[in-house]
Length: 50
Image: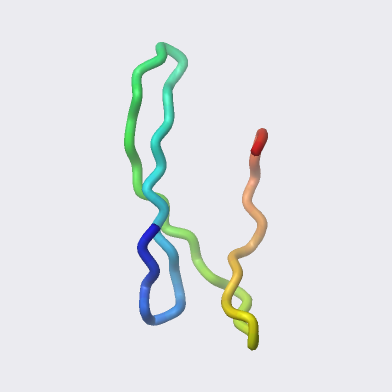
């Protein structure tokens, strides 16, 4: 994970397998929307599991 030092985004390097079992890489940029004394957080994102 690479943080933007402007405090506005986080880049996640995502590894996943498709329906054929082939592995892929992608970068996902997450906007940080809440900033407070404890740090920054993103908004909620859809998920199918943890």
